[in-house]
Image 1 (cartoon, one colour):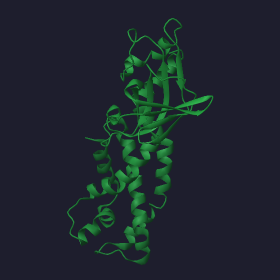
Image 2 (tube, one colour; image 1 turned 180 degrees about the vertical axis):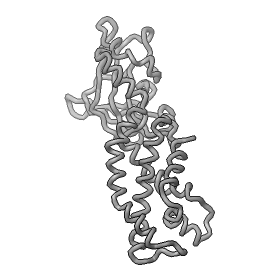
Image 3 (cartoon, rainbow, N blue to C red; image 1 turned 180 degrees about the horizontal axis):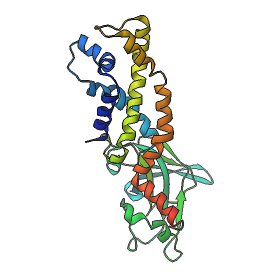
Image 4 (cartoon, one colour; image 1 turned 90 degrees about the vertical axis):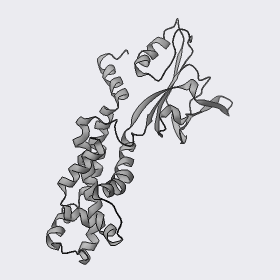
Length: 266
């Protein structure tokens, strides 16, 4: 079971079906559109709202060989040379780069060490590159996303080669990068988002007495009114809770954090 299906199933258990019908199925019924509540939740809430927000606070860290990217240099002034790095989409598995974390350029002998996108091979890379007998490492962290998978390096750069780029890319569309242990947390976030959507969609109609189809308006009104704080709760949950969970689901960054805690010299 995927994280999205789990979240939709749990949300439908948390919200009465009559309320879900009013929010997601009434227009479809009027125009005889073949759809389901599950489909509507995914199209109207998860894709345009939840997925956007979780990509803003987290994603998947990737390590990319800088030599496989397109690198162009330009003179900002007489003393500062900047660099633009364009990362082909096939290197990010067709994902959009959300944040450029750092670039490490190493003047090392290729026969001694080759940078790859394999995180296990890269774990000791900085230590190796800083060895005075092998080469010198330069780390650039003043980076800016200026276009689709295009990064501007603001630091004064001499040359970028034999190194790697660390970036944060968007989550997989089906969220298979989320561990099952995090499914309940994700489902809570989706439920809050759905409740916020329902409140904003129906509260005015409720006030006008425009809800119909034989529903108990008083009871449904009480339920919808209880969702008035859902948007605030959702935004706080994304920022305070999901950001931490997302970080722990990012294997590369979390492993790097644990290694730093255990051995700061790595």
